[in-house]
Figure: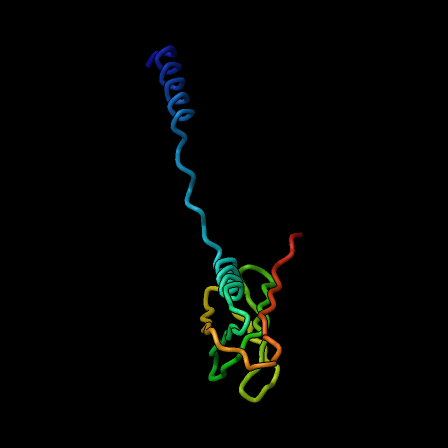
Length: 123
C-alpha cells in the first residue's frame, strides 16, 4: 500500500470517528452505590407516619439495621439491634448483602427511626 493511500485511509477514518464517535464503554455498576441510592430513595419516599424497617438475616440472627457504613464501596458494616435489643454489627462484602426492606406505620408519638449512612471519604 502506498503512503498516499495509507494517509487517505487514516484521514477518512479520523473524519468518520469525529462525526460518529465510538460508543462509550458500558458503565460498571458499583453495588455499594446502588444499594445506598436504593435505601436513600426508599427512605425519602416515606410519608410522615411511616418508617423504613431494614433487616438483615445472617448466621441465624435477624438484625434491624439502623446505620449503614461503607468503609469502602466493596464492604459494608451494618449496625443495628437484634431480637434481644443488643447492639449488633455485621461486616459483609457488598456483593453478598441481602437486605429486607419494609414500610411500616410509625407508632403514634414515637420518634421515627431513620437510617444513617456513612460513605467512604475521598483520599
